[in-house]
Image (cartoon, rainbow, N blue to C red):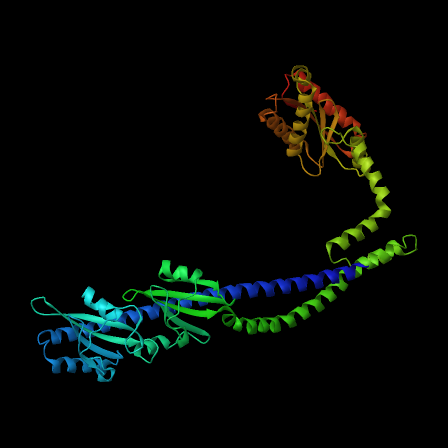
Length: 512
């Protein structure tokens, strides 16, 4: 298998894996976002409905309290009681029936009168509870004497002297049409969701499915959360195996909990269309990417294929020119091409390297005597005048004897660095033996050469050499011109000047 097919396979796999990963990541993020948004929306809607229900119950309490005040002054007036019962029923349409009951639990007035309980003593749970607690109250759901599942909302009636006279109350039927049912049943939350209400004993008192009213709420995480938290949301699998997203909130007066439900499947229904839209939008770009990958695979592999073919014909005449014409527009091909072209001249480069090593001092990296001889020959053949500075380290033997040869070698290396710092790129720097050094300064007058030698001496004297401290040098300066004959004469003159510098006390520069 060639490189082009390998690159193409890799590109196709990368594109497909990237597409699948992006598609999956998008799906997971959007799915969780929809679930979180639905849970929050359900919680907010349940809380809103609980607050609305609370306001409704507060309004009912106020209506009943007003009626209690109206009839307390003339509680024995049957006409007044009947008129107030009818007003409560008809004015607000909040109750399914209204009754005025005395302290013994006997009904004094009702509306509508068709329920036919006037004059009867009520023994229903709501009626008995109202007589017992004698405060505004919302009863637990119960079945009335007429067979209706209802709640009873009552307000006590007291005389001016504080004597308990009875109560006025209204019923709201839970399985029949009422203003409470209409309020709870108006689903502004969205399609696919529904709401139901449970009392503090977890019995359903309102549901879109009337058959569920009066039945207990299913036990599970939702039931526990409703009982403990008051308000919140959670995701749960129902007993039928359907995943639901629930928000709930408690109504403080009645202690009811309003629960808003939406199935996870219904919530995620829009996600399928969204993912199909994402796929339709990304597919053309993916195909375009694959085509581009094929073209780039061909473009990338072509130079390598040509190099591989040339490698099989290395003994063919003209292969060098063929390799030269191969395009090398990226690094690897350029390096391989260069390696193949350089292979022919590798031996010559090795010879050149050996030649350089022969001319270089291994410790300091400066030219040795062979390098110096070649430089002198070059100046002589070119009739190039030069100045020469010969110097050595004062009392270097004492350094070796005191600190050892390793420290002495360090001093020589530091001396080479000082020499480079005081030289130009065209100057020839040499170590000709031991602590002896030479500088050849082409086309340099004696004055400038002397200044360079003096600057070198001063820099060395000011430098701090490792393990040794201060080190000093003595130097001699000479000049050679083409008319002077053998360049070796200039070296001899500089060497003589160096010895005069030592004889005169060291650490100084002497001109030949």
